[in-house]
Length: 481
Image 1 (cartoon, rainbow, N blue to C red):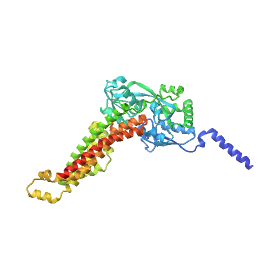
Image 2: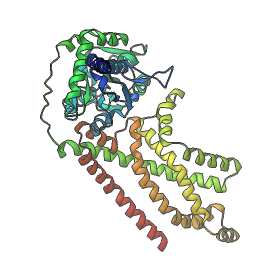
Image 3: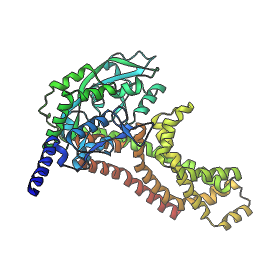
Image 4: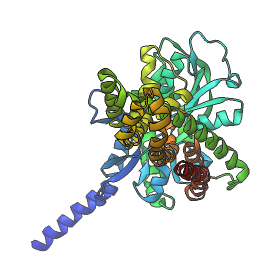
């Protein structure tokens, strides 16, 4: 009797395993995605921010159900999804990854689950753009590293502005910072279709596929994922999901007949002719922003220091409050407020101007403290003696206090300049392509993070080291003076 029960129990387990092939693997399937990519892919529910929604979330849930495994989302920056997949951070990526040769070199891909096109969007009162070629000579916003970005590169002559935030890109189009937006149509439909100030330039252009990325060599999981997607296409599950997000188009019929042996065009390999011009342009932008921002920081810092030491009570209060508030809040938020926040108040800044102002005004707080420390290091007796000899306040500062205080302030000011030089990479969030951003774009396209990273680090060192030498030379001169 006991043996009969054991045999029966084993039979039940085997039957369950045969009905649910994935049930034997209890470990959850981790899938990478980026919530900042926005709707309709995968994003935080505006009504319940702790809940993830989107058609790819529903696709992942349906996939997990068919594989008999729980699906565990892992948040990662979109540009880093493929490298993170290769490192083993998650098992697969479902986040609008385009089936391109560049991506195929970094990952294995499932059969596609969506056929997309690119959409041009302009302001309703702007009739200059009627076809794709009309984008030449225009300021066009697109997403970094996307198929649309590469199409604009191939077109040439386009003033590209690179974004990672879909809300910001259409806000900039509406207020005139951009003349057109060119992104994948699903995003355009979700963010711009109901905006009465914007117009779609029809028909859409280009065509490509979204597919699930898997780690290279993980053929077994690929077969399971392909089988699950085949089933979803055959029984209408995928169509139901897409229709629920108003993404079903006649082009989706191509999914049934899709056949790809995953051929990859030969890689042209690392070439200085390809990479150096872009890195050089990024380096020039980095130097321009850093130098201008530091000049602004030094001027404003000196003014704040003088206000705080010699000014009347209201000015002392203002200078103290400025230093404490600016030093106590992240530079990133200050840049967002300057570039994306001010337009709501009717003040619209160019990205370059916003970058210089953001860095300069932020570092002005640090410089004010450096100058204040230098001024207060001058013995008080010297000031009293100078005033007793009949020097005015201005003459006292000009000939006695400031020359001595600079000797104290120069070393920390120099260190701040080198720190600002490296912090300038943060301006990429407001569409500026400086050295670090250029490196990120090249690395995500070629997956050569080590070689390009070393070259980029060397460029930073070559630029910053002379600044350190100049500061040391200036410090020695002031000491001998």
